[in-house]
Structure formats: C-alpha cells, structure tokens
Length: 472
Ligand SMILES: Cc1cc2nc3c(=O)[nH]c(=O)nc-3n(C[C@H](O)[C@H](O)[C@H](O)COP(=O)(O)OP(=O)(O)OC[C@H]3O[C@@H](n4cnc5c(N)ncnc54)[C@H](O)[C@@H]3O)c2cc1C
View (cartoon, rainbow, N blue to C red):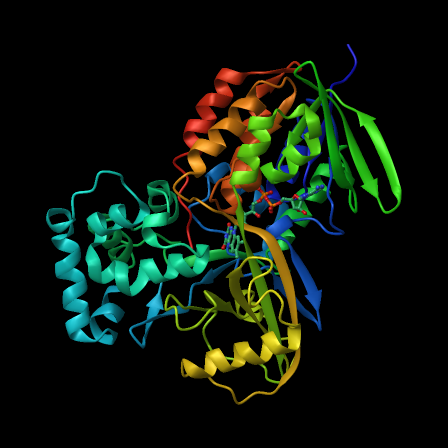
C-alpha cells in the first residue's frame, strides 16, 4: 500500500506537534504548509536589536501534560529555564503581586476593598441573581461576587473581547478563568504558601532563546524525522468532492500549485478553511463561518535606552482606563543581561482591524503606550529609541452568546468530510495554551493507525480538550 500523504496546514504548535509525531511514528508522509516566513504561529518569536521578542507574554506553564513537558525538556535541554514569576496587577490603583499571594493581598490592597472582596465572594452563591439564561457574567457573579467581578473580571474581559459580561458565553468563564469560584481562587492563592507549594509553584518554564524556541525545536525534530516543512506557503484552497478531501492549493509568491493528498489536518482559522473550501462548503456552513469571529491584537513594542525598565517581568491592567491588557519585558523572561543599555517592552492591545488603534501608525502607538504607562505611575525616564508593532488577526476566538451554535454547524460539516481534521486553537475555536495545542496534536496522531483515523477515540479526546483551562 502507498504511504498515506497528509497535508498539515499551519506551522504553529498544533501543526508542528502533529507533523513531528506523524513523521516520528512513521504514520504518514507529511508536508506542512505555513503561510509565514517563520514557525510558531502566535507562539513564535523574532529577534530585533539583539532582543528576542514573543508575540505578547508567553510562558510554558508547569501544569503542562508531563509527557509534553518531557518532550520539550528533552528537545531544549539546558536551554529550558525554570524562572520565578514576578509580575504585578493593578487593582483599584494598587499594585499587587501576580499570581496572587496571600500576604501581598492582605498588606497591599486597600483594607475595605479587600474585606468587601472576601465577604462578597464568600456569599456570592446565595446572593447571585436568578437568571433564565446563563452568561459569562452570571456564572462569575455566582462564583466570585460583585466586587471581584466589577473591579477585575468584567472590565478585563470587556477589554479583551470588546463585549460586556452578559454578551459573552458562560463557557468562557469555565475555559478562561481558572479561579472562577471562591474555593478555586483560594486554592490557587494559598498554593503559594510554604508547605503547600510544589517545586514549580510560582514558576514558569521559558526557553533561553525566546518562547518560539519550543516550536523551532519541534520543527527541527519534525524535519529530522522526515517531515517536509514549507514556509512562505499560503494555503489558498482545500479541494473536496463527494465528501472527501482531494487536494490543497498552495501559493508561494506568484506561483500556485495544486497538490493531491489523502488527508488534510488543518490548524487554520475555521473561517479560512471554509473560504478555502469554496462552493464545496454548503450555504449554511458559509453562513456559520461568517457568524463566528476571532479577536485581533496589536502588539506594541517600544525600545528604550536602558538595561531594564522595571524589576517586574509583566504588568497586568484590568482597568478600562488603560487600553492595553498586559505589558511584558522580554529580557526579564529569559534573565538576559545583553544587550546592555537597551531593552524592549511589549504591550498587548486587543482590538479589531478597522478600530481606532488599528489605523494608528507605529510611532503614535509607541508614544500613546508610554503615556498610558506614565498615567499608571510607571517610569517614563528612559528614552524611546524605536517603536514598532506586530498585528495578530487571530489572537482569541470570540465566545459570544451565539458562537456555540455556529461552531456546531461547522464542526458537524467537517466531521462529515473524509480525510479532513481540524484541531489547535484556531481549528477547534478553543481558548488554550501552547501545551493544550500540542496535546491536541498528540491526540490526533494517536488516533491514526494503519492509515485509519479512529473517530470514536478522537471523540473521547475532544471531550478531554473541553476540560482545558487557560493559565495566564
Ligand atoms: C497574547 C497571547 C498570549 C499568550 N500567552 C500564552 C502563554 O503564556 N502560554 C501559553 O502556553 N500559550 C499562550 N498563548 C496561546 C498560544 O499562543 C496558543 O496556544 C498557540 O499559539 C496555539 O497554537 P496553534 O498552532 O493552535 O495556532 P497558531 O499559533 O495560531 O498557529 C496557526 C498557524 O497557521 C498559520 N496560517 C494561518 N492561515 C494560513 C494559511 N492560509 N496558509 C498557511 N498557514 C496559515 C499561521 O500563520 C500560524 O502560524 C497566548 C496567546 C496569545 C494571543
């Protein structure tokens, strides 16, 4: 029998993880197509001015599946650092250590506010308004009470998604908020106490060469195992007929090539996949694809003429008065001391193409960013030597109240097409961390044996993926 040919679409963690495991286990002949000039997708890195930068703050969380963590450790060796987390969050004008610590909460929060947070959270269940239809807002109000929701989660989520708490689906609270009730939150906070903490509590893994080094290493391992990885190769179409995938059309510059395949494993945004299917996607499927959307993000980078901006690796900004959601300093993630006299800050500015910030040029965004930081009392003494941006059109899947119905339509169409599989953050419309995207890839490969994809086993994996909760 001829070897099965699988086209893996997208070179982020999900696509790379699948290409590597498929090739390593000799399950298929693999060609991976990535539109960009580098690997890693949103979890990649790039170098500028001697500093490795990520696309927003990225950490490898110790909660990762041990098998995945072991693989990453063996690929990166001593270049995978275990670093202490040293961030701050701004709550009611006060800076609190993040992740939250009991002592810091008790001593730094305004005492009346701290008391109201606790009492409110403790009585939240009994005081939560009865609602007919659950929303993100009602779930969190019932779990954490009004003070915590109004001072932190509601403005933060409005900033991230551009939607109010009652316009967001209840699923978002389960997937995106790991401390969504008082007991869960307390467990998280008190796990930092001596005696209760594990060797990795309050720490994160981070590669010396930037977060993208994880995907670069997986990409190299995939190539070594025989997978062909094609950069600058945009998937323009996925041809299907009689409910089966037939070929993919790839564009490289002016060159367009149509390649026959036995299977397509797509990690592309669902909207891109449906567009690529053209008329093969029925009208109701195209309508559903038109009704889901991904939230974009501008990453605003400023280069400063100083060794280090602050001692903190990241600052979190839930308040709506400042448009960015997070600020990170890449040198602090890897404890880099070079280059001297220069550092870069990366700010995450959620938004959508066409909105107020999206049309601003890089210098104006850089200046605006420094102004926002100053308004929060952060230093403005160093000089900005350069400002630049990267724009992510697919940062977060938007879980509005109707998304689930539209996603179901897309999912059921995909599962009816032989040889077509979607997974990863964009492919399953999932809020996830990199280790979750890799877990999806490993799961998919485990389901393929002797050229046959075990749909029942995949359904079990899909149930497991629903339990993934994002770590910040
Ligand atoms: C701001 C931010 C912070 C994050 N922080 C963390 C963190 O701290 N820790 C963590 O573990 N995770 C974090 N994540 C999540 C992490 O980035 C994702 O889990 C991961 O990137 C998902 O991988 P993926 O392969 O599923 O998708 P993606 O990374 O989105 O990869 C999809 C790939 O498909 C490619 N593609 C798209 N269209 C085409 C086309 N037509 N043809 C060919 N290729 C195409 C894209 O270029 C991209 O490379 C963060 C995400 C964001 C946005």
